[in-house]
Image (tube, rainbow over all chains, first blue to last red; front, side, top):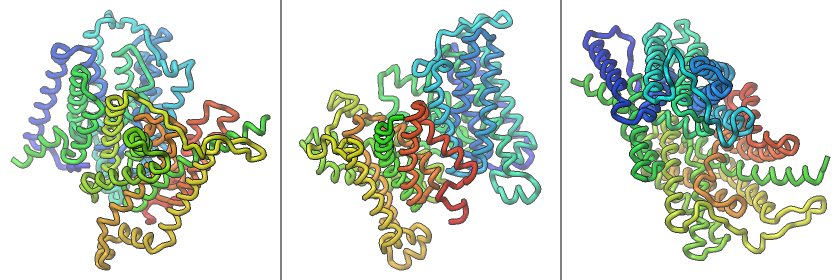
Length: 318
Length: 296
């Protein structure tokens, strides 16, 4: 994990750069569905928020969760289930997010007691447990078939059968989620969280309780991943076992790494790159797994700073 | 209650336990000695099965030569990967090993899928056990396929040999020294790098062997290691990561417990291992046979 200390007060130049990033990302996201088809654009929002959520834990707490599909997938299923049973879109989304938070309580409690690779394996195993549950509990999850064909009732006069409307609705949700992540990182809590990541003993000796910080970070991350998962279901109108597959957990890691950890903007950009790449490969009928696997390997070996991290690195050296 | 059926279930549990044990033993050797979390283990298991199948197709090689050759080939591939790629990540957090081998897993699975489709026009291939092991044995109280008994026996034997070599011999002592204190070991004139590569080779060779053994039971297909590796990881966590004895005992125990569980309530078969893991972690965060973190 490329650790960038962020304890000093920001300089004006850093503030300017940050504002430029924010405006740049905002503009791109506003015009995105005009450049590519809206469902893909919505995918980028959902996966982007998922990656930001993951990075809150990985980049800012140093905990590599290899089972974040648990929260994304649980929320996806609960959202779909609520929509199938006639709930409105906001209720379904909040329900999904709430469900993700609820299962994050026991999972987080059990896993933050472990560190490093133990943490990764334990989170992976919990996600797998939910994946088997989704497969078995056919009455609720549809088993192998998943859930599909659910209604997306309009809300405040918005017509959700139009994919553009869905996109802009989700853009607002995304902005809210991103703001939560941004505030978390900037807050005293976020600073303490990074202190725990950088030196647990030292943080403990000045009176912080590392376990409590990790647990809280875990919950915030899981909640945002849940919000992202409900966006994903809402966007597609289907949910399948894929949302709980371990590949999903791995892919969100890849997006985050590719974009740059500890950058917040990075994960969104990484998600965009991966999804666009996959779209191009599928359309051109090229083997997706081989290329994405190769990209993953190259990023881990040679490009651990990621796109945004590399840009920041260059800028600092100037 | 049908005791006969339950006994058959227990034996089948031992068979899947044999695979868990072989795979988690390989993972334990690699993690315990080198601190590498090899997510690719499932893909290498699949490569073992696929190599045996491909050797049969291309050179008409039977089961017995493949049983020897395929694990060696897999070990060779593993050693090349360790030298070329994994060794670049030493000194970084073990998470990066996990991520790199995850990428390699995606790569390998789809590569094999492409090869199978283009060379053999199949996405999953059958593989028959050798004539001498086909048929059943009457054990008096239960009738059981010969080949499955052979799998249980061979797996036990290999696990025993590996444990003996690492814990009781000079070779094991050198390996442990190389990994615990490379500097001093080097000063004794031992080429630590070569030993590390060798250990990795043995670990993935065990996965390759499990793959060949699995080929006649489960069909050979590119994703055959994908779900198995996750269960194996759970076994490793329960047993205590890096513990040789823990991985073998837990491997067999989980296989049998899951089979008995499935006898009474079938849907629980695949989930039981994760429930066990959660329970064990509540009581012992470092696993049944693992040392507490930092104790190494």
